[in-house]
Amino acid sequence: MQKAIGIIGSGMIGKQVAKLALDAGYKVAICNSRSPETLAEFVTSLKGDIRALNLESMANFTDMLVVAIPFEAYTKLPTKLLAGKIVINTMNYYPQRDGVMQEVRTDVITTSELVQRHLVNSRVVRALNNVDFVRLLSLARAAGSKERSALPVAADDEGAKAAVVKFLDDIGYDAVDMGVLKDSWRSEPTTPVYVSPYWGVDKNKPLTAEQIEGFMSAPGCVTDKDKVRSLLAAAIRHDKMFGMLGQYDTRSKRK
Image 1 (tube, helix red, strand yellow):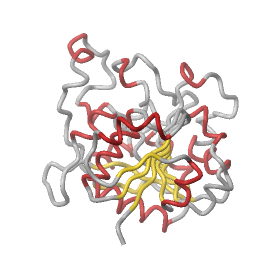
Image 2: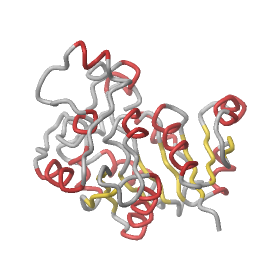
Image 3: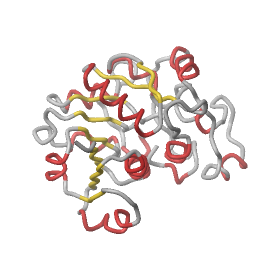
């Protein structure tokens, strides 16, 4: 049986995951908050088995879904429709975009735990949230490559985690297990493993004008499993683990 993946959200991350999945031989379905017709141009621009569906049809298309929408919309995800599904949570909280959300207390509960609390009958996996959309595409490498990067993964369900690790492997990435969802704060915005190492910038130094200007063309840096493990171990938890729009190029607002 051919592998299949559904993508909820047609922003920067969602579209890049669609491209990677197609290259890996997956059947792909993608949806947005408008209608399948609004995705026609994107779908026809790609080679492979990709289609635009509404959310109801996508729920019948596959049991593994990537959610790549603004975090403020997570409570709009239909709980019954996604029951039993593996839900890959890429969402990060940006107060400037998402508004003040009183339930977000990053020193007490992770954003992925909030998503799992809402999608009570789904199997939520935290992944694909800590790399920017440009490097997500450009750093993907075949298994066995010495230039292969890794991404952290967390889930309460070990079977779901294993399935997502396999998906990451298929699309070009190794995985580092960072534990259960309560441990997923280690890959949240402001942590050492978030965006900076893949882009190749020092998160502790202000970005230069040249770095910001070159965001779209920077080749990125290989961030292998050993490096990811060390970055995860160096993370410090606090109460403002939020993304900041404007910290990176304005075209990266989905990440």
